[in-house]
Image 1 (cartoon, rainbow, N blue to C red):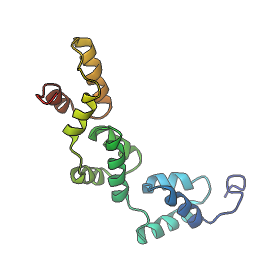
Image 2 (cartoon, helix red, strand yellow; image 1 turned 90 degrees about the vertical axis):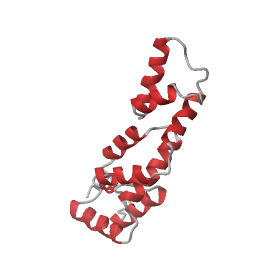
Image 3 (cartoon, helix red, strand yellow; image 1 turned 180 degrees about the vertical axis):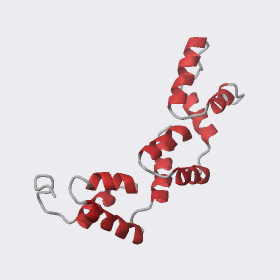
Length: 151
């Protein structure tokens, strides 16, 4: 354990509880945050305790993350990629996205309504479509929304 990194000599469980009090974390994220301060065995012990007490749950983390990011205007592909980078298992991501109460088409339509009227020039439309692709929406969904009578 590095003395400079952990000046107050906080126990692994106390450090973990401080981190979890702020927000949910994935198991992988929490492990990365604890790694500079504690040994692998200490981290494994604390992670096991958190899982046992249900203080740490990747499925709950994914559900909350999907809700948060979709409210910020991001699509399912981008959110899935971000969750994967945070160490959440693919099956948990798929399950959470299926169970998410998000109407992706309505979300995309709201994003497009902010940019009304839609650009007429092909180059500008392509720029807008590319932005929506980067935000994580599928090209099929984008095309359906672009040519939707609702817009």
